[in-house]
Figure 1: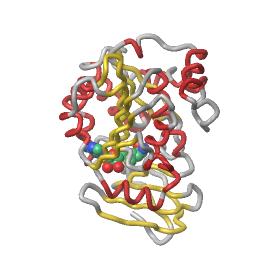
Figure 2: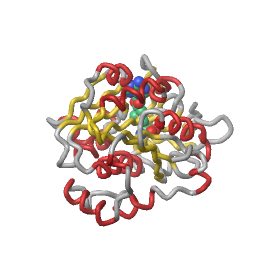
Figure 3: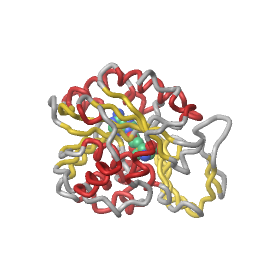
Figure 4: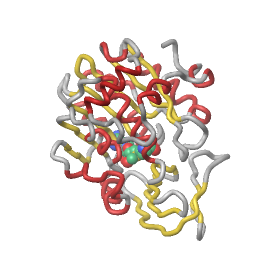
Length: 290
Ligand code: SAM
């Protein structure tokens, strides 16, 4: 995957990005995946899993802010959140910024991702790791949702790898059915659905699957520079009233004020959240009649 000075992403067989490496920080074959952490010339620290870029210090804020803030503000009253995957800690940090949150359970299958992120990318998780509201579990998200009590969580955030290798089971019927069961009446689930320009099936199939278990299925976009290929899509699905109507700009702003996140972000704003649900036709066509 690397020569002396460059690391090439191997996500797509015919096209990709590459980074000039200042220093390789770790290279570990864990029980689940091949993990590389390096310091790049242009993007700060970078985490790579099985050859796919997961996070760079320079643009992680785009993805993490949109993955955490949008569902929490759409819900508006969330107290209890389940995060699956997200071993770098960035989603946990954004979730705990919301002062309404009383409990955030994070279930990451690979303890090595957590260990290496804490050691080499400490700014991404920040103080979240030691926040008393956080419960960080090293375990399988599939098992966790299978065994969790019904009606436990207001929001579930799935920050998974793509549906190949270790992350594959997080895109199945059984997983979504259990998520619907353990969510509260107005509960919401969000998960990354890939970059449709390159991975159109991901959005299409995930949306079809979720439509079986959730009354409302929707998606929104975020432009994450290192998830190459244009917009990334984030799929949002809900059981009850939270997604039935689209909030006004004023309502989004008020929810953000209550949560205490106005003015703390670098990508998310009320207007960005509002516009992110307006999908370009080439993306909307992959959503089954929603
Ligand atoms: N935000 C980045 C992205 O989307 O590219 C990073 C995601 S990365 C941190 C996703 C994490 O999901 C990985 O650390 C992986 O170990 C974890 N994961 C994959 N399958 C899982 C499962 N069944 N249960 C819990 N975590 C899982």
